[in-house]
Length: 105
Image (cartoon, rainbow, N blue to C red; front, top):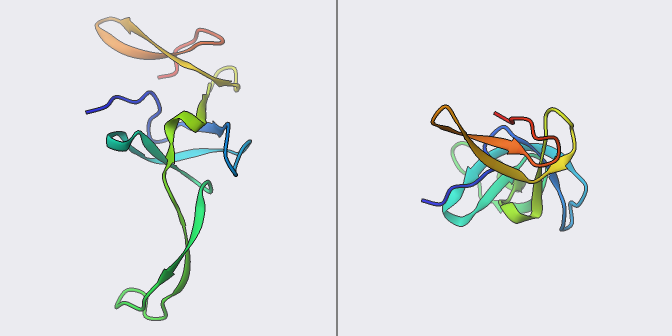
């Protein structure tokens, strides 16, 4: 399994692509393909057939996964987009902000 440094619930800023500059929250992480689903980013229209749950069908807006390399984590302490480092503290791995040096978790 691939380890990623961005997790569900993190605040990220999109650095490239059509949604560049948007800051939002990670809704889901998909480590197998190194992608994440970010709220209100990568929205596409999808035609939906009528089903029992959605009897009217129609055009739906859904968020598609984007690659994790196109976003940067926003540090909760310094509130700037930053790279993420790892350090071992008390036998546990802790994510660290590369700009201010504070723990993220």
